[in-house]
Length: 253
Figure 1: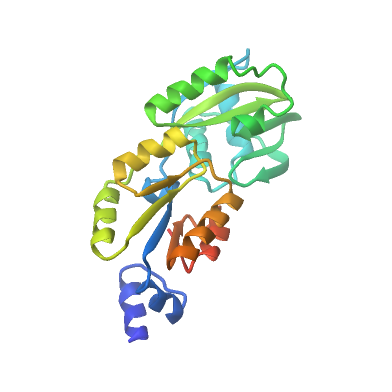
Figure 2: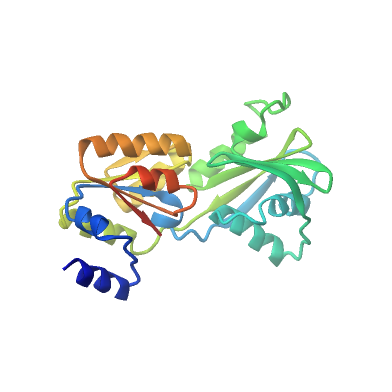
């Protein structure tokens, strides 16, 4: 029966690691979903670029895409696609250090570049005042349900990218079907800000939203859900790998 089930799943493009995972799925009562690339298409789009100093938009984009050119994250792909469409030549980045779910830093053509959350990028920049340009960017992104990625150059907050990611058309129907199939609780777990995550959650119909979570926070959240019921974590399989491993069953898109 297990072999037949695994074969049937394979015909539908689902690879099951072993019979234990397949049997556990029958007892699942809680589903935890990552947002980006799971409930959304993962085909992020750069909707706007805000400048905070004299650096040109094209230069901000070129530096960001150069730093992020080997990342598989949907936002990194969006930055690269936008740079390619504008014919911007990317440079090789050096000394790359990544803080998963927070940001990435390195050197591009001798310049120190940081890309990620406002706290990560503005760390040590005394000119990045709370009432300045970043607040306007965050307010506009919240209104549009978009994500923001800030960029710092040589220790100064230089700008931000406003990035949108469309909800998968099948997501609301799929979540309704899962509830009818016996799933009692659907949780959306995201590293995005609360306002962005709440906008997506309202559109797709999840039961609970856990936002602004680091990869370590995601692991803790999954463990907490698992303590209450048999839990599946669904994510991209890269950034979310620790959270997938913490669940009773991990599903990588």
